[in-house]
Length: 423
Ligand SMILES: Cc1cc2nc3c(=O)[nH]c(=O)nc-3n(C[C@H](O)[C@H](O)[C@H](O)COP(=O)(O)OP(=O)(O)OC[C@H]3O[C@@H](n4cnc5c(N)ncnc54)[C@H](O)[C@@H]3O)c2cc1C
Image 1 (cartoon, helix red, strand yellow):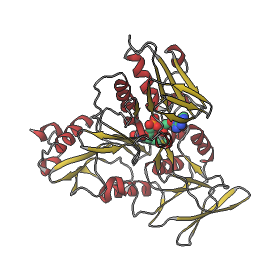
Image 2 (cartoon, protein in one colour):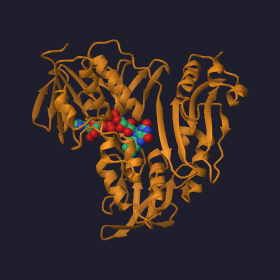
Image 3 (cartoon, rainbow, N blue to C red):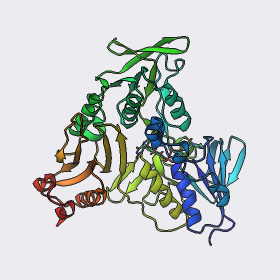
Image 4 (cartoon, helix red, strand yellow):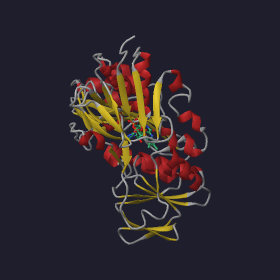
């Protein structure tokens, strides 16, 4: 056992913070662990909020990171509905709800992200929905009914998953997106087109290349949205998914190095040696990608929480997991379950190589792998409805970042095992 008499404080009681607390105990830390969260729910995972839970299929309990009794059983002090309002790195204190200073030996900031809000007429008084928390998922779920007219603002992952859930519940759906395709910045035109076709096959109407000017309605009820080109779309539900920003306010006020998130080294240590950061809020040095990256995905919260805990314990825990995320859209055909591994900056690839057909057909699920390639090197890969291939795809990406090229004809050929491409 180690750490007796020490206090480790974790700010942010969600997936990254919860996993860090779990790892500290699993690794034998015997000191005090305080886990502080401003939400009133114990740590939970957010992916179900736009998928199984929003569809009405998965129970609420499935989203929680631990059983309700886990915290007491593991002597983790879970302070919920409590906001950390200041950090004093010199005094080694965290101030809670602006009154109580709590002394720490090591501090982990796992404060995640906050949704970007729209500041346009009607945004504050017509019941406009956002989706980040369980409470917001509950509210949205109550709105999605047969015949509801749903407007989704923003065709990113959350917007598209909400569109799929709304169609599942029998609502009509219009998605408004300033760009020319959904997910274009993340995936590029080639794969973004697949997602546009997928949603069109399910009856979703897209308005591309235009933003929203205002929400219209009266008496607190939305009736329509007005686009920047002056056109109006009838809507009784509007869901905004226009991205998130890292919750860096505590770190900034504490004088930590912040630049698109809390800047850390590969051990998830911030500019202060006793303060660590992980999950959505951390902009960490990635030893394989050889750059700082901030990853807004589930696996990064899960694995980063574990790695940060090991670093807090003084272990040499280099965090070098490749960025990985998944998304599921539509259970009825055509549907896509996908996993993406790797990292490509928008537009910084030569071509997308498809292994399999990226075509959307009415009564079949597409099955393909897309590889983002530059100079013959695989920078990222995405498997759609093809499973158990993440490991070889990640090996290709690691090799690609190490400078190894692959034969593109063999990469596209499903008869060549992925494992053989590097030999
Ligand atoms: C609807 C939805 C669906 C998603 N689906 C997927 C998916 O399919 N695949 C995928 O890879 N990723 C998905 N994600 C992203 C993934 O959930 C996030 O990357 C992950 O939640 C990040 O976890 P985190 O613990 O770093 O931060 P967060 O989940 O943002 O949690 C941070 C917590 O810190 C709290 N906090 C912040 N500041 C303070 C403070 N000062 N004091 C106290 N508490 C504070 C916040 O209230 C919050 O509870 C989804 C996200 C959402 C919202």
